[in-house]
Length: 231
Image 1 (cartoon, rainbow, N blue to C red):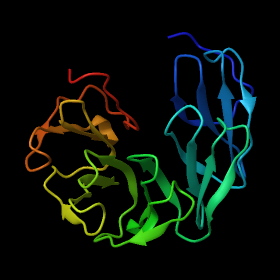
Image 2: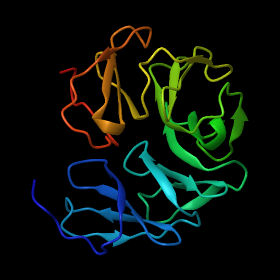
Image 3: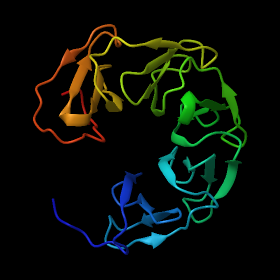
Image 4: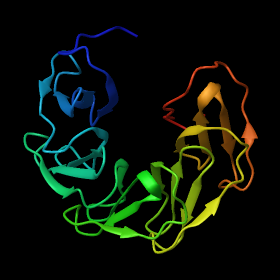
């Protein structure tokens, strides 16, 4: 790795690239979170502001032009761009509790989740959102759908929710070994991966019915994990 310069020394909480040159960073300030964009692989960055939201936690792009960012402190906010971040507009503000993650499964259908076990759905490209039922009050911070109907939402600790009817209802699984997990991923071959505090890592090859504990390689908290292929 090579350290790159950045316009501020404030905390960076997420990095997302939509191609080899174009990327976005969420940069936390004392009272808000700004979005920075690069079009030259990180050599320079432009501040795109906060889009009218505060304390953004997650950013996600459907394609090079259309993207969403979500967050909020006491209440949730979701902002949207259709021009690669040149401008953003609020599509939800104060309607729900704080939001930690937002994902879309196609151009129209998206899900968001966050504080208090809240799960939210849009069927019109993120312009409007409705709350769907949730069987937990735990903080939720990761969303993965494997097809239009089957999806998973994970939260802090062992919480893992599953839907098979496009979010109409959810079941909860607590089969994972006890720990404070902070990240959930599904690898390209369908293997579930979870990681969290004290370097704890587990994996499941049967959609979460059983889990295998991985050897700890650190005692630090693991905040993110990703895979480019099954191995």
